[in-house]
Length: 112
Length: 116
View 1 (cartoon, chains in turn purple, brown):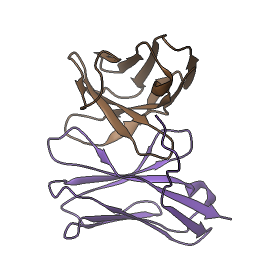
View 2 (tube, chains in turn red, orange):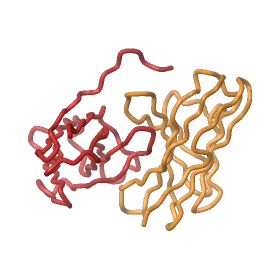
View 3 (cartoon, chains in turn orange, purple):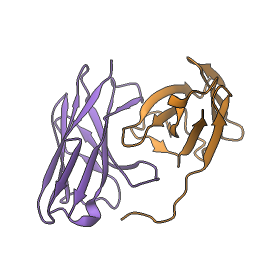
């Protein structure tokens, strides 16, 4: 059933500022990581991915950083826009494993 | 590319009825599709992995007889919620994996199920 009183970590950011969303993972065998964006009532949308042989990857207005030493992943969004308001999930998998393990999600609220 | 559709987008049904949800990969062939369930303000919970031409692999705690999965072609997987009850009300999302070597999953828009 539904959980009552569950709150997602929320990041409020002024339009035009940069956003940083963090994610910690626990499986040291994970070698592939993805960030997804989910708007209310919609399915997750692929943003960017990174493999464990890299520590940084850039896309359009987004950068993913991977620190394998401390098992930490972050997503940076440059010049945040109102359309960036959503819940952001990190996901991880390991080689040969079909499945993705999702993090708990971070809500980003962009203030116009 | 890599577009996944779901039908219906929302459904309301009476307790005890069965509901079928379709997941289609529109511009690619997907040998593997996945079914997730999501409650409000929670993360996605994998229910099962659907492989074309073979039986689905269910996650621990997911009832196989309750959630029937069929992956009859490379572009279509279906999830049937049998004898639905109010606690089955949720947001059901499918995803498809592109190719056989890449782990990236592309998600459908989701289906909102409300069981009265």
